[in-house]
Amino acid sequence: MNTIYFLIALFATTIGALTGIGGGVIIKPVLDLLGNFDVSTISVLSSFTVFSMAIVSIIKQSKENVKMDKRKTIIIGIGSVFGGFIGQYLLDLAIKLLINPSIIKIIQNTIMIVLLVFVYICTKRKNKEPLVRSDNRAIYLLIGVILGILASFLGVGGGPINVAIFALVFSMDAKESAINSIITIFFSQAAKLVTVAVSTGFAIYDLKTLPFMVLGGILGGILGSSLNKKFQNKTVEKCFSIVMLMIMSLNIYNIVEILSY
Image 1 (tube, one colour):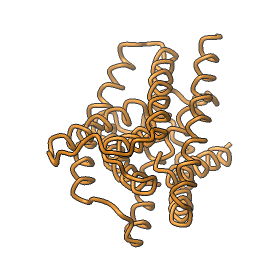
Image 2 (cartoon, rainbow, N blue to C red):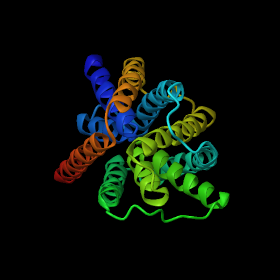
Image 3 (cartoon, rainbow, N blue to C red):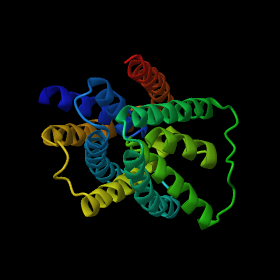
Image 4 (cartoon, rainbow, N blue to C red):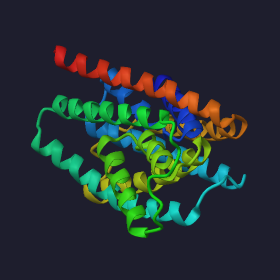
């Protein structure tokens, strides 16, 4: 079974590093489908895996001088740290208030479907003019906070949403959106894992598969970053669109499965 989790992590983070979606958006619904872990454990497994991918991907791409606006990215990243703390708090609160874990899964999957539809539409828009022309740092910080909250609460890293926001708001191309998204994921997932560490700790979670998933995340980060360098922007965009449709279908299937019980 550990081999299966390794392959899931490898596939998810390879696609994640290539397109900027991170991988959690694939890992979360797949682990929901397998049904071997509760909501909290899936969230932690996904965060660790995506965080590992983000580290190696950032290191690899930084050596290759990938295009990015460092000041803007850092401000958004700082915002995502605060958002990560808030998102984890909201998830913990939801788990306490909604005793039935199936309800939480339905909420997460439903929000994810709505966001993915929004993401898909945004990435297909023809008008590439940026929506934000202001250089106001507060706006960048607010965007980071929102992205961090969504990433942490949904337990998916937030990659697809990041990519859409960077493309929609700042008119970044596919490759630039990808690396900026990965950096934002790094900050938000770091905040999430720190929150878990200082609140409940990790001992209460079933993390026996974690080493295999982290290994998959590291290898996926290396492979995905290499593919991102080799592929053209149009190829990255096509991969992104195909993956979005697949993930939307999987989330819908998960909701139907839960409601059928």
